[in-house]
Image (cartoon, rainbow, N blue to C red; front, side, top):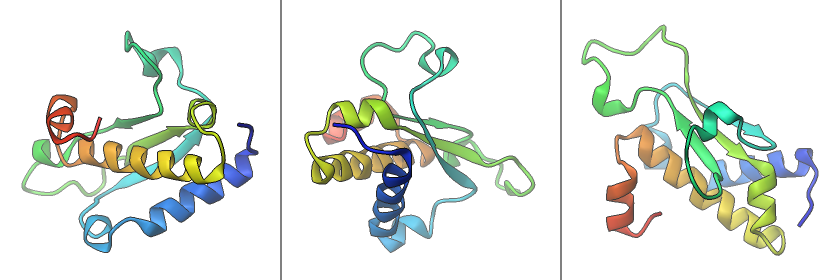
Length: 121
């Protein structure tokens, strides 16, 4: 399906607002970005379709002394691949929401193997 960047960003905002409050309260120093597609660096040998990407220092690796002053971590959602797997806006919203949860799981130190075990990949 095709969707303008502006409408896609609105869906992302709605999906973020719908995330559980207790999850949002524990996310620290993370910016959510939208790009049309991943760069070659972001793909870096990954196979398959990349819908989103967490880049940063997950909470399990942060200093107990704090993380203030650091550049924010990033969760990037890739508009074109997400649109390509969606049949309509409702499906796209669901994919965006699930991708956000998946990438925020990485922020908390949960890797892809564990996400597979939990059924979140």
